[in-house]
Image (cartoon, rainbow, N blue to C red; front, top):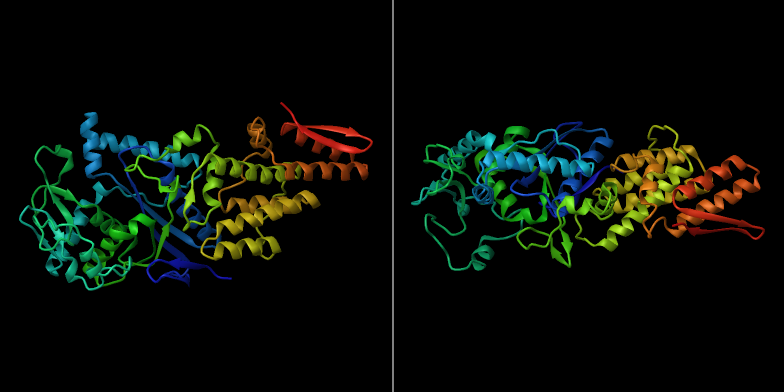
Length: 462
């Protein structure tokens, strides 16, 4: 089965074929850097980390660009509040972001452009749009995009201009020809710090959010590329406006596939800083190990909503222990991934169906059960190799299990029973070295065995 991807633009799942044979170019809207990243941000970055990992597993060369927005109203306000320069704030927050998401095993993109490094390209793009009659400078100095002059507006979000107009509040037309128009260049305001503005033919100011991404993706990936991604909340207006600007200027499609990840929710509300209902990545990692958090996030399909709770994280930790218990029971052989084997075929079919991580994880559990039954080092090696494509199961199994042994939820009963049965089978076969090894595996996990004529029973140790 070849890779099929749900395209937000067409609203159907389509066969994925890159523009250039063997090479995928992907742009993902990254963080606006004014504070620490929360776990909802991690959900977005992990979703596209898994996607780029799988594309590489399929043999593609991937140029993955995830931008950084380092100039914005919130950034300016925070820098002023703290009495530091914008650059000092954004440098600090970028370093913090990299530490936090690095702990989750999220790989560094091929390119990570900062918006402030591409202002000339943004101004050039605005000039091209102005020459085509799609941009104008308003009475207040801002340069706006004329939405009604771009015939394809609304094709990504499915919103018509009439629907957008009907949903308006009282129109504020100061500096605009139409309330639907959006800002591409913001005129400098009184009192803004010096590093919040650039000189231009339009006067001192700074770029709007939407034009930043249009310029950066064109400069790094070309006028048309394969995948554009981001959170579902960016579909409108940010990505809709990107399409209008980029395609208005070039006359070419911006991206062939648009991918959007679902929200991480807390008490059935989208997790966001504006609502104040969020946990930073650091807060979560103070209570749960990084691989458990990663496993929790990817057990859900990237497009689905996911509810954050301690119960769900505890369940993820229990599941991850089951997988590592199999790897400790049977040390994995160093094997190359053979996609012709049944478990690997099922795993690949799941991932090739719009990056179906829930089904792929189910294959890992089935494979772990088979490892427990057969004690096959080759199957154990396959388990580890398949896990690697998701960024999982690459740690030392014994160390992981030791680190969790005092957690009352771990390991789960099914994993313990499988180990006890395997030990009983080893004793019956007079393979006492193997039986002793399994006893040690259980002991390292905090499980105490009691042997009797009737068989072995177990209990959790202190």
